[in-house]
Length: 207
Image 1 (cartoon, rainbow, N blue to C red):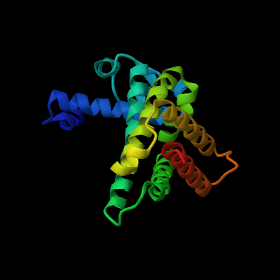
Image 2: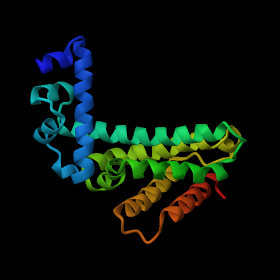
Image 3: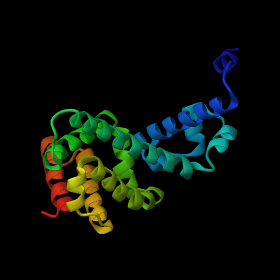
């Protein structure tokens, strides 16, 4: 009866979307706490309260779910940065050089509030073959997205817009965040933000 009440008044598409969301949430929790090696169809179905049949309605396999979870984590991080940038743009005009520390502050704050996302985006993307292949493409694209968020049209015209710069910068930033998130870094939060902002500015502006 409880199950019938839960789904009463919902369409089959709505139920499918809700199950998919639960699988994504369960995958995020499992991988964020225990790593990719702990992710199995059985484990994620149990954690998400979804039967195996409905799992395969949503995803062809565990790797597809892992990739979807990774993309969701990257998208949420970019959204947090975009909200912070939009808030700053409501005030006095601010050049990219001054905005970048605020951008990295937003990124760090988001990862502090959602440590599972940090592990998935950075640490697990280095350790897992499936995520590493995707990260090679998505992290440089992420850098380009940030560039367009932070730089004004005039600044964009004079900034570096090439694939190698985005790849080198994304790799360096990922390494710094992996070390910070590990809890063993020899630098603190403030230094991470300041140095990442300065490094990003120098790499993208060409100064």
